[in-house]
Length: 228
Image (cartoon, rainbow, N blue to C red; front, side, top):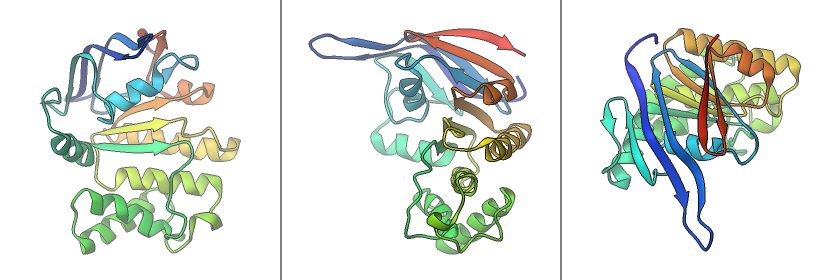
């Protein structure tokens, strides 16, 4: 562990009710500190997306506890959870999720505005975030004119613009070629070195190798493989 505890998940289960209830998570416990870089691996249907949604405050566990940056999320209102998410969590998705008619700068700025940052400060933060990922020369570009690697770096900049404690990435290299994958891996390693806690869902062996810790989900249960 490199610093203060950012994520504390204790005995979390998530059951989707129905005619035949589905246990997506079964007694998962996980702790991350500032600067931890965890690769989350597992077969399709093992519960990876469900765990990422719980960590990202997009879903709530059926039982167990989840604390983020020292705040117990159990009894929070939707508004409180949204504020905590905006203040502490950045998301990076495989398919980028950029607004196609907005420039790279405007896409990143949107995330800052959503977090309550004023317009002028949001524009400054967005420019700084794009500079940090090496895209200060592409700020005015629309997503369709960017390469896959550039679009993923815009997505990373958008995740970083609020200075999050936790970055959640779902298959961030899944749509990239080898050169762009290497660029994103270098960027993730820089973020880890800067003290951000990272959880990266991946099937990519290179991504898993770059992490400092790999944990595997099997049928909703977490099997830690330990530090490398």
